[in-house]
Length: 234
Length: 279
Image (cartoon, rainbow over all chains, first blue to last red; front, side, top):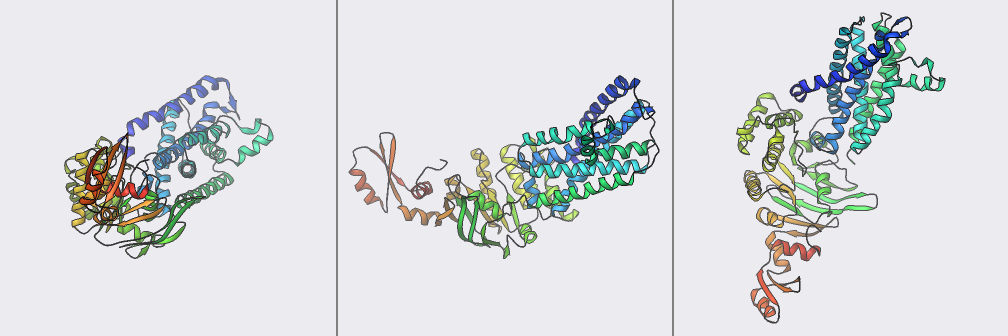
């Protein structure tokens, strides 16, 4: 947290770049002539970009950092030697990742506002963003504890995180894909995050099933993170 | 203070530590020597609970390292070989973090940080980032960090590896000072002169076993206190003798250049492990 405060400027501006590009490319560039479900495309993709931004930032903040601190700086040992429980350690890492993800979501929301999108944002919206951050921070912790080289950590991002960024209902609805893909995509957590955010933002309220799926992922991944920290002592 | 019995660790078919028996008394500085790969660091990691033993047992202050994890963690301070301070935090914050991890109350924590920074002579640099520090300063800060929660035993893994001679002596003085105040110290090293200058007793490990144990003087007596080095054709030959007279007689019988000197711990080490350190 102290580190976040110190590097806030750098963190903040780097968070601006990605969403800005997405918004320009897909919102202004491509999106001019596209209508999705009778709505404006910008309004369609903003919740998707928020979901993927929250995912990427929290995964990297929790996962990549922990992986580096475990394998390169070895600072993880300091926490393992300290009299704290694995659950407390994982909670700390997940919360720190979530805070960064949440800041990212707020940045995107502010940018989208400048681009002229009007979304119905309420408490549920932020709850879902937070839950999404929690899910992917936990996934980050699990990956960081199990993956044994930085290269493989990058591969994990490429094979797991990157496809989700594009496919999970962020830029388009998976209805147009072959059905097998549709099924796979519907199992992934990010799909439910973007569905939920879109539904809330357009004033349709929450989708209980999606919320349950996200919460389920959060619980399972958190438990897996705790188990991974416990078993790291071989 | 530390009781180790038949402690073992194997990774697949590789025996890293093969049944170690050792007792370390309260107030002792004990050095664990051995060539690379002898099992020192594995032993160290098992005693500090970073690695689970495959067999045997070890207890610190009466607490089993496989059982009462939290109790053991409270009585040990650990300075790992690898520089693992948080580089993005200041010296002060690194200690603060450690204090918080050990659930020390705020007032006491701040008091202890000031005390320790003064103790390791870093008080003037309290608010500088750890990555601005020199090797010796980082090492001293790591020692201060390990002392934060007032442990009774301090584990140091290669405490002076990569330091210049001044920084090294500085660390030695610090270790002696802590010891004179009652701290039990267990360190691993492959600097022989470090063990000789610092340790009350040393144990020499090779291939996962303890092959010698005693005070540096005892160990030197064991191989012979006087060494004759014959300098012939590139490779030196060493012979050990109990006293100078015998050494002189042998030296007289040699045609090559000879060097007669007191044995040191390195001789013991090489004689017992059969190869130069660091091979």
